[in-house]
Each structure stands twice: as C-alpha cells, then as structure tokens.
Image (cartoon, rainbow, N blue to C red; front, side, top):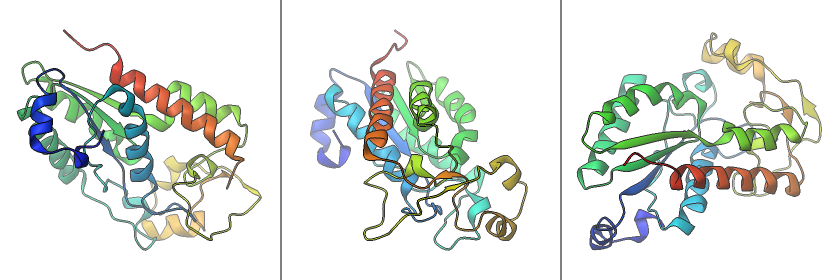
Length: 234
C-alpha cells in the first residue's frame, strides 16, 4: 500500500503491529527514447508490487538522484552527493521518528549507490532501527533473468523498456547496439558523454518481447518482496 493512500491515523494504527516500510529512490535522467523518470518509475512500481501482499506501506519515491554524467541531455537533473546524502538521511530520520524501525530502500539508479554505506551507517546508531538497501535491477535473481535473455544490456536499453517506461507513440530501433563501458563514460564531461553515446543507449537491444520483460519483472518483484519480508534483527 502507498502512504499516499493512507491518512495519519492509518499509519498510527499500522505501527501498533508492524514497523516495516519501503522507500523507493530513483533519478530524473536521460533514458534514450524512454521516460526521463524511468529509474523513479521502476523503483516505485517494483516496491509497490512487492510490498502490497505484505501490507507494508511504501513512501513516495525520491525522484532525483546523482547523475552528473548525463547533464548533456536536456531534462536530466542531478544533485550534489553531499546534498543527496543529507536528503536521504533526513527523510529516513523522519520516518524512523514515527516508529518505523525496519526500512527497505529500493534503489533504481546506479549513481545513487554511493550513498548506501553512509546512509545505512547513519541510521544504524538509532535504537532498534535497521535499514536494508536493495538495488532491485541487479540483485542476483533479477540479474540472472536479465542475463538469460542473452541480448546484451546497458543503460537505457531493453532491460528498462517496460510498458510503464515507454513514451506513447514512440518507435524503438530493432537492432542491437554495442555495449559501452559506463565506468569510462563517468570519467568524461557531460558534453563528451553525449558525443560518445549518441542517443543515450549504452548498449544492447532497444526492446525485447513482453514475455521476456514479464519474466524479468516477476523476478524483480519476488526478490524485492523477499528482502522486505526476510530476516530482520530481533
């Protein structure tokens, strides 16, 4: 269930019996012909689909992240790492102040991953609080489902091309693009990144059959659900 569908009294009642919550985080950055909000859309949707059968509330997704390398593409928004760390920490401190003690951060953007250790550590010192950080797209079972498609994959390729991240009326190329090294891209300035990657796809097919996408999504939902429902400290 979404926090947006709850009133404060509903949250208070929930906290009498459960202390779990989910916070999705994403970014607003270029994704070739897909939505600029792809990372936010996927993180929020996988969190909601995973948490719903468990009755665990999902907070609104943090829509912005750290993505300076794509600033050469209009519409991309990036935060400074220090700003982002403070933002996440303060959101989580607010959540825990109300009594949520078991929180899963569902991350949908690789550029946010630097925050995992400092954010988790900052919350670990609070009595009874435990934060799990889950990069949903490359968790073991989900990544295995991606690799099974044998289609190559990079940022803004088929593996992010779901029904809910497509732009209405947009046609996607049928060919595959050579996979580029994102680690090298991050050493370049925004202008050079755009010159090197062209349309924004970092490699692989642009689109795959819905049967493939459904398998990847199911793996992502089930794996995320297992993290939410899994072992927590006593």
